[in-house]
Image (cartoon, rainbow, N blue to C red; front, side, top):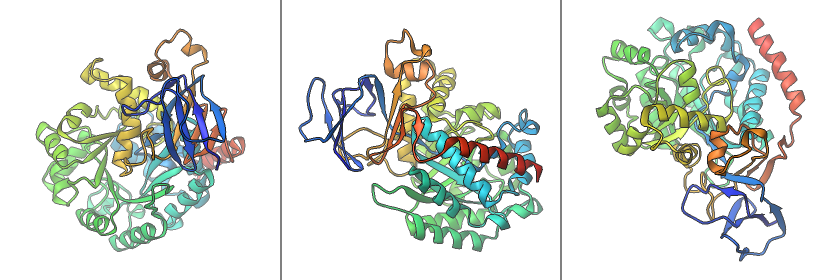
Length: 450
């Protein structure tokens, strides 16, 4: 691959204090040099990419999603309900997913994320009906076709309605099957090198859909295999009440009781914590993925981001599933995080730079890859998102970084993953988007008609 000087961007957010106003030099999968204002690279280069009209960010990182849910966006029966009835109505629909539908749903989610400037996405897949036991294998194949980085979490549900859980009985699996498949997936797909495109994590779904036994065994297996742990926690008051009634403890006490209160863990949502719980989460360096669109859509609440950060917890950003967040657009998620968190903490504390930090460096920390992703710096991977400010909505804006969120950027002009262009001039590379959309719409209708 040629050495490329990405020259003199209109503005650049590096996520650190390094000066890159003169641009970036990329070789292979890595950034090898940052160029200061009015300077030229020290390193030799083969190509110049003129960035004078572009705002450059580290590739955005989505730390919580459910790719399969792109097939059930804006479904009328669940548009106006909170989480538990939303799930009860959708579980039977999702249980009918077949391999082709999951492949299409994954590619649609990843394509939409790429077009928004996202270069690395974590998916929480926890549905393994009889016709879909190789779901993660299907997702690996779909992601490789796009060349995007993914953290695919081997989710699970083991607590069905017969045992007092929320999921229908035919959607749950036995613990031995879950653990055996989890180990297989880690050994087959998990890439530990810096340039790796596929990671695997273990992710029992939620307190109301798995047993304490699978939580404990997953924590032990994750430590043994040295991979990360993920689950939903403290998303709604209904979940809090479930934990009190079923386990006799609040969510963070439950988390500690099953061996998850540690820095290997990142949680989706993390809304309903008291002050003591926030302190304990911070001391343990637990990560929290904030999902503002979904939390607003389902009226779940507001994540206490600053309180958590003040105690040492890590905050990242996720779009959540496309049947609750409904769009897989991470730059819009950063905008929503900015506005929602200002309602809780005020305009002075919640800046565009902080929201972008959550969507880059913060999410990289949650996924265990902050030493080479989430910033623009020498020796970091060349994952970059480029935005133009030439639409009417940006006319008259003065601060380009702030304008991305305040004026509502919703698509990237170019996107680079591991030094390779995946979006050029707003066009996804290597995928026929019109054909994908057609097949996906047909699949969505078939799923609901089944």
